[in-house]
Amino acid sequence: MTLWHKLGMGMAVSGLVLSATLAHADDDKIVVGFATAASGFMQAYDKPAQDAAMIKIDEINKAGGLLGKQIEVVTADTKTDRAEGAKAGLEVIDKGADLVVVSCDYDFGSPAALAAESAGKISFFLCAESIKAGIQGVGPHSFSASVLAPVQGATMAEWAYNKKNARKFYRLLDTWTEYNKGICDGFDWMLPRLKDAKLVGEDTFKNEDASIAAQITRIKSLPEQPDAIMLCSMMPGVVSAIKQIRAAGITAPILNGSGVDGSYWLSAVPDLSNFFTPVQGSIYGDDPNKDVTAFNAKYKEVTGADPSSQYVYPGYVMIDVWAKAVERAKSTDADAVVAELEKMKDEPTLFGPRSFSSEIHHQNRGRYLIVETDKGKPRVIDEWTISEAIPVDYLVSK
Image (cartoon, rainbow, N blue to C red; front, side, top):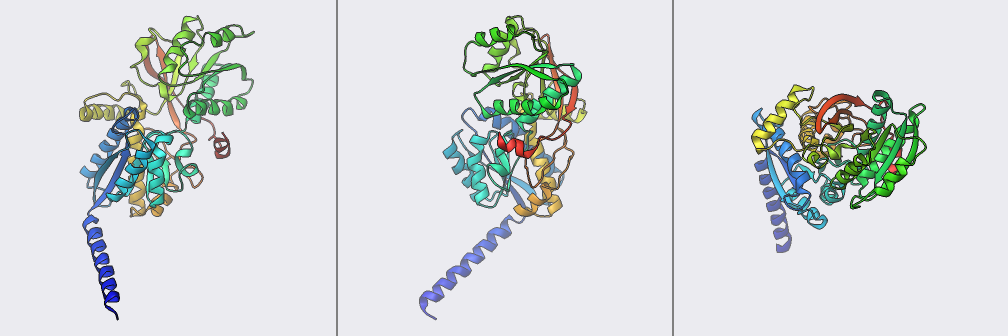
């Protein structure tokens, strides 16, 4: 045996020893890596959900840990930048992450999720609501903790039909984001399933538009006025749109998605009424599940502020379902954990049941609370689960 062969074998053995030492050193912990935005505009979305995830991690650790091990958290800032997102994903993987948590939005979270997929690690989007935030856009180890935007549109259409006796609908789409389009996609899927319901008109606008006077004129000129307006929009432009609709004397119920949850904007539309949104949990102190109200109090105790919107909650759910899957798999091995996640069917969580399958790692059906804003005051008035799940083929085709 030559000297080079001996040196090569020695280096290989040393490498194995070092790897074994590191593995042994990590045997007493499980690592969750957050490749999320600690700066830039995505911080406003990522941080609240991440804070909720940290609450669940703390609960698990205080209860004895996961598989008898403490969960350790490592972080890297994506800086709300796609290129930095990929670097952040690799950074937390290098720090030993067993689970890689990525940004709330598919576009900004996918670079880190793709890095995790390449490394054979599980990734969870904090609250992304595009079907691409999972198998279809990242790969078989990627999931999202929230409920798809199309489910929100379908929920509001079916609920308004059954509970507000709406039969004539108007569709007003803000074309700015895929999220907005997703809300209307779900509405479009549901409407033909509602006997004698019909679309009496539709129009579009852009979030940045200062005026939607032309669209409002077309609504008021319809031969029959709508029983409900499906407004597929989000902050900040949605506030101006709502204000203009009401200022024009249109009093029909306005239905929207979860993106407008929160009372922080309501002062801009004084005494807003007949406005309805779907939420996974209520931040208003009236959730029918008292454990949610207790969570809200805990969140304020930990962070110093009340939850700003329902988008806080998916962060807690994400750690909950992942930890359950790890316990059932008796391992953090990605494939084993994925297999357990895909067995979940209406898995109970604090904020409604969750289901995953080998076809979809997102929620194409889910229980929503319905929040009505009346005279400027939001409150829970009902809950609704769509009568059937939105088919994966339909979601992928949009």
